[in-house]
Length: 346
Image (cartoon, rainbow, N blue to C red):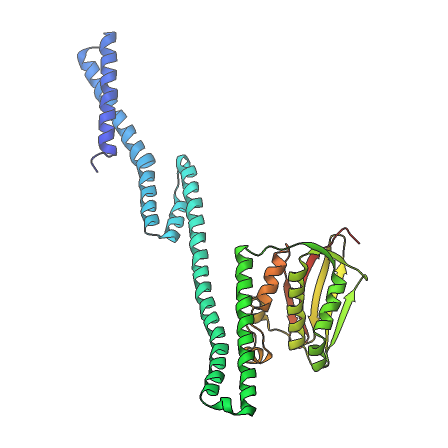
């Protein structure tokens, strides 16, 4: 580089020395030799001061920043952050901090994009797998009918029912995927209304009564009051409750019980849905709300469902400014819990 600290020091020192010589000559108090000596001393002193200042205070710090920017261009963020942390100099602390904040944000954004990319790959793989099963099954039954089984009255109806069942499952899966997508993009808005949560739970129990009776499971509502009025989207909250109670019936023990608890305080009603099933192992609890995640894949497939029920529950509850939690003990059952805002009415 042509312009460096040495050349800058020489030029600036020469200017200072010339000014000093001119000033001393104007005063006419020193001899020519004394003026030259003073000028030389001034030149070398100014040069050393300027050179050292530029080299070790300014240019060295600028070079550090330049190297860090080169690393930024190469996307070497981790090394970049380490360099910024180690860069000294009070005069550059503000610049260093700004760069550190900038790079930290970029690093977080990149990490988040990597997570989203992995999530996208997993989601596409899961969707492909989930769609493939009902499509291939229905396709197999239909081709069997076309190959001649349609003339067999006994098998014809059986194959058509199985094909229809698989296509119904496919429709349910697609509808759940669309619903989740709308919730995540904000297209689906919650329509808040006041309604009696006790009454809704009783309606859900009636709706799922046949499933519970098949396993001789008792559906129990534990409510502190006869009427608990909440402010929420009744359709979506009902959908969440149906998913949770239905899961509790599916995975609960035969001749057991499913309890829905409603405990009201000043501003909220605390909801719990408890079963007495085999429970969920600790390593699975963190992932139960993931799309298509099944604790026991073979048994879950037999029990039906799209694998998106708990993901929908999570999104619905989050849309009501709450969080759904899960606690479980092996052999003791599982509890899902969340809270809803109560209404001033009632």
